[in-house]
Length: 100
Image (tube, rainbow, N blue to C red; front, side):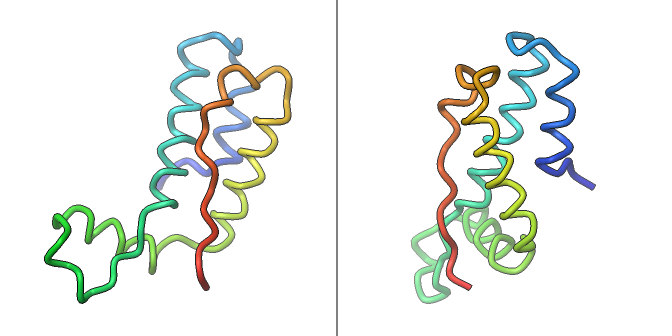
């Protein structure tokens, strides 16, 4: 089981915003966003990509629930709009809209 974005947000509240723990938790959110933003690769173009890129693309297409994307978006927005977290969250990537 992995940490959901809302769980990470809850954990952030336990630490000082400048702590290493807060930075690590933000890094997890960033990694989740990067994973969700992974390019969907058409099977006809598999020869142009590494096995790892293909696995990530396949996993994103079939294994990331819509609710997780929505939760991640809400958590990112909350962090970006909170004065307390602005400085450490301003470099979080935007979430790309995925075709359904």
